[in-house]
Amino acid sequence: MLNLAAAAIPLLLDLIPGIRLATPVSGPFTLGLLVLGTAALTLVVAALWYERACRVHCDPRAEELRGRAAASESAHWGRP
Image (tube, rainbow, N blue to C red):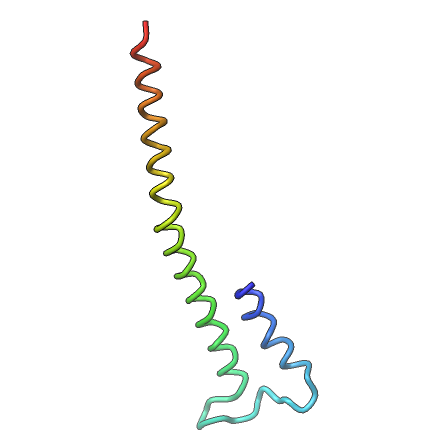
């Protein structure tokens, strides 16, 4: 949802009458540049958040399942 908002907001702002993304804000920076920069930062933060969540929640579970599979496989080959 966060990624969708980061992509949709600049597009929707361009469609609203009266808002010009080429409006200078400070020096060479325009409103469009700041909006797209914020969107890019949002995408990077979402990616880092997702990576951390996978590392904390998914990786330990995957290691546990790999350990069980290895133990099960070695037990299978050890049977007569």
